[in-house]
Image (cartoon, rainbow, N blue to C red):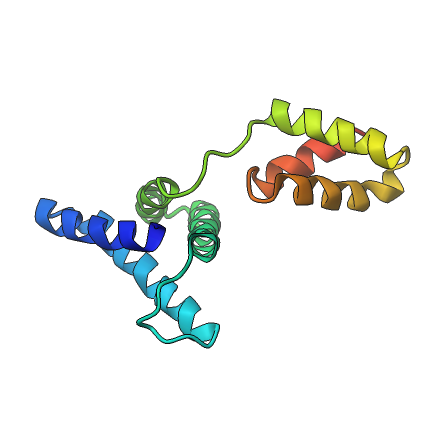
Length: 149
């Protein structure tokens, strides 16, 4: 279970005195507890793997957004810190599909749904995202779908 793995890694990070990793892991655990409370459970409950992945993906997306904002604001120091935190989060996320694999699936879906015009691009995008369900980055899927028209 991801929840238990995070708790074990917190102990390892404490022993190894890895401050950034420990901070990230504690943040993940806090986000897990917040998710439990938000869904009407007690903080002592354990979050299942699917919900845990959703929380970690949300945290990773926050880091990516922060990196983008810090780079726009020319704050390289803060962007680098967020990048380091993101690398720790990505260890828990499943490997994302590359663009070639996404393109194959998108082309099959386009043929299945018989979509020819750009007006139905949103429908194709939704179908591809549903098919991939967390296995590919949404930005990559969007670019691949747009390239088909």
